[in-house]
Image 1 (tube, helix red, strand yellow):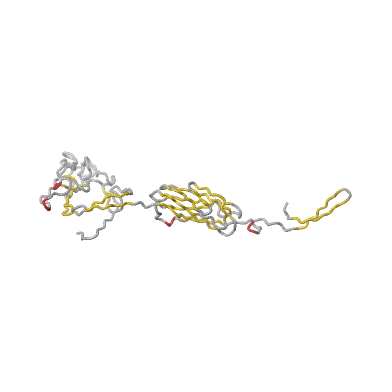
Image 2 (cartoon, one colour; image 1 turned 90 degrees about the horizontal axis):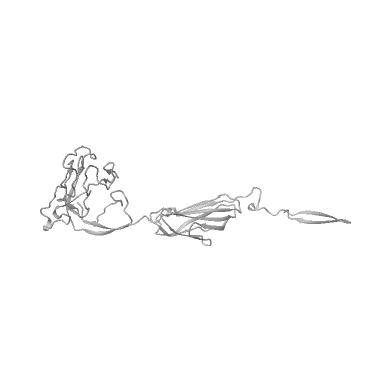
Amino acid sequence: MRTSGAQNVAWDGKDNSGTFFPVGTYQVHARFHGGEYHFPMIDVENDTTGGPTITLLNPPGGSCLALTGGCAGGFYDDRAYRTLNGTVVDSGNTAGNVLCGLNPPATPSSNAITGYNTASAQRAFGAASGGNANVPCTGNFGDAKGLDMWTFFPSSTQLAPLNIVGPGADIGIAKSVSNATPAVGANVTFTVTARNNGADPATSVQVTDLVPAGLTFVSAAPSQGVYTPGTGIWNVGPLAFGATATLQLTVKVNRTTPVTNTATRTGTTPADPNPANDTATSTVTGTTVPGLPNNGVPPVASLWPLVVVVLIAGGLIAGRRRSTGRS
């Protein structure tokens, strides 16, 4: 028995076939079931007339139910279904389809809100006779299974909107470098990848990757959008679900100590629900040629004296100059 006050109903967001409802706004019909009665039919094989007929003889206030069929209104659902633990009842079938068996009802379930007229032949199934195989799926529709029908006196219906929203646009950032240990003075290329892992398309995607000290910007080649070297901002633009965009960032390495280059998602619409994958880094460490000082840059050789002797007619001329050691 429900008490007065707020009521909560847990729902996994899926329909009877196990498919998530699309993003959108739906109208919820909430009502109480007063005096709910069930009329199960066990191993009946056939029901070609669609009965049994249920009739409410003494409706409250003298008014019949607000259901299809009025005081003869009721409900049934002869579709396969999924239990709370995820098991689909009716092996070999899928939830949402009519149960197995020969000659099922033409309409596998009544309207979930207005029901159906139990005095009609809407739920007729099976054949005039026979069909008793004692196996749920090889005999006539009602063979070797239980089928339920129920009715109740409904309260007035309360309407409320149900808004289903997607998980948003999850922009994940990845980063790699062409050479983590280049020679000082050499160029390396960082590759930044932005991927939309969410269920919604993203717009106004922005990634910031400012070249740090120890590296010198050389060039940028985005697969889409525009990269501004002065700010490090890569305006990626839109990214559809599952789509990727890349930025090839070429820099010159100026020192032997490690330099870390960081790329971070700094903007997207709608909001990104997962900040854990918004940032990626790569580190380079410049190397030098063994035996060469000054971070590997060949130095000017020590000055040493050089004597030049020139032979000309009538004598010798000797001179001295200092050499830089360069040929």
